[in-house]
Each structure stands twice: as C-alpha cells, then as structure tokens.
Image 1 (cartoon, one colour):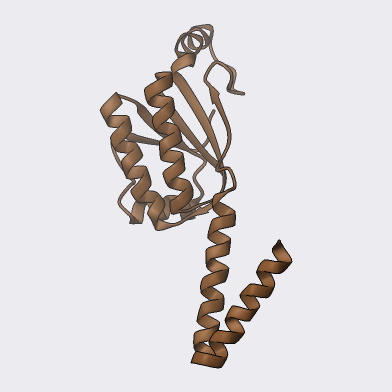
Image 2 (tube, rainbow, N blue to C red):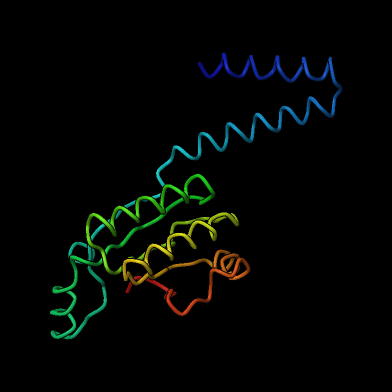
Length: 173
C-alpha cells in the first residue's frame, strides 16, 4: 500500500510540474508530504500514561500527615503523562480526554506532565485555554509540570501563562 501511495504521489507531482511548472509541482509535493505527516503523527497517542494519585506516588519522603492527606485525596488526582510533539489535532483530543476524566471520573486535580513532550505549536495554547475553561467550570486545579523552557515561552507568548489559576511546577514531586 505504501509503495502504491508513493507512486501515485510521484505521478501527481510530475503531472503538476508538466502542466503547471516546477514551483507548483514542488508546492504540491510539500503539501502532500505535510498532509501525510500530520495524518500519521495525529494517530500516535499523546498520552503516554494516565494514573490517579493513588497509583502514581511521589519519590519524595513525606511526613505521615502528608502521606495520609495524599491517600485521602488520591482518587480525585489524575496525573497525565504526555509525549511527542503536540499540535492542533493532538491537543484537541487531549482536551476531550481530560474533559472525560473531569466529568466522568470526578477528577479535581489535573496534573499534565510535559517531561516527554518535545515541543508544541501555537494552537496548543488555544486548546489549553479551552481546557482551562473546563477546569474552571468544574472547580478543577490545573497543574503543568516538566515544561521545557521553549514550551513555557510559547505558552507565555500566547498568553496562556502565567495565570493565577494554572500552577506550573518543575516536576511531579
């Protein structure tokens, strides 16, 4: 199937070059390549793992009182570990996943772990704006951890951060 697709793509590019010109053929080739990339990448899971606060434990030694409190609220804490490169198609799916956790599972603390995220595009800030609205509507605390400096800078540039209702922490501990 893949070889057949490549043959058709090559034929389309050559036909465009012959009928419209080299630059137009190059543009068609780039458009097809970008479309294939977006389609293939959007099929990859952006959520590496999702666990409640009961299942996801900190590696930091805590007092008995802190441990007791974490055990008590752990079932309303959700840690979502993200991976890959986040762009519009994946961000929209992530927002819907988080909405389901909030509405159906009763999550009150949503922690998004960005340690394994290589980068984001500007549309992610818009999608996260929608996620923030959902969190506000349901009284959920949104926490972002492990943001790379360039991701933090982009979210700041898009005016998603800083925000008094969104907590940014260096790591999950």
